[in-house]
Length: 269
Image (tube, rainbow, N blue to C red; front, side, top):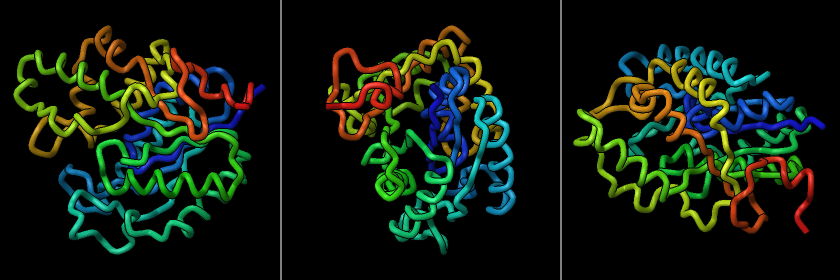
């Protein structure tokens, strides 16, 4: 039996970073996979006008989605809120009315007859305002649409800290990594409900990341996409071979579930 998975993200490249392997695995196993982004990511750190960068990033998203096996890509068209909370552009997603934005996403969920929606954890991972809003809007949209299963895409904080420590040993990278902000970012291991094994789909995830060329440069330090793509393929498979989720309404088990459709196959309770 095939299910429909809708994966909701803030900006192009988030789909590859947080859920790329899971989307590729779901598509390969015969499920319908749809990606929705709230913004075009036009406030990214790459040089160029907002309009130009937004168009480039949506084009990159289309390439990434094809690499992952997604059958539909949609952008809600909100403005990228950027990193400066005091100077958001008009129409910024972070300032959007939650009911209005949720209704727009819910329309798509109903149209797709979505079985699963992925959003973000309550903190938006590392706290970006658009990521926090994805959590709020996604949760409400699922309620409006009656979507049976909502999984919050996140990272295992403990595994992340181990991975950063490993990367810090690499020449020319270590001096840029400050682990202090990561001590409270994403999710602690005990709340995770899913640890999805995506090692078989590492090549597709890597191809999806490579599609986001605009995210390989810009800013004061190395970009996450660039760092991951510089890893030797066996190390990339190790670092990026698990993707993590917290399913709303499900208590964690040990070990965590590997199947994002487990609740649909065997409902909780």
